[in-house]
Length: 169
Image (cartoon, rainbow, N blue to C red; front, side, top):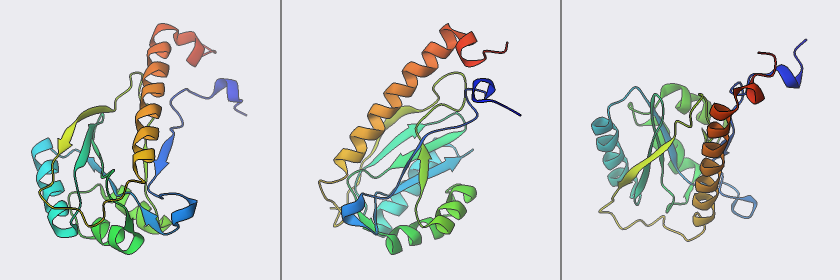
């Protein structure tokens, strides 16, 4: 039997869901996951999605094995987000299938490795005036940024004090 004390520090991750909030049930901030896809292909796919769904700017984050994308300025009903997930062959298939099965998406904001592997890489600008744009998602953007900062700090502490994260070693 494994106790909490012996659980590896990276055996669980913390994520944030696409669900906007309890006051806006059924609405989502679109977020995407790409695995093993070159940045140029990710950006081209994002531009296709922006055009097709009239999404605004996309915030791009590099992860250990791919990219996370958030459309922080957009709020869309599940049907629109579902169509986005269903109709892009570049999005990670596991991410898409799990999101479609649950009815919402989750992207991790915490480390999965000994170093914090989620780094902001830039914004893919949209030339489309987003009809989905609302001020509400700013709160979600701030939460994501703050959580990533917190987990960057935690990963740094884990490197400095490895016995804290592997007490049995």
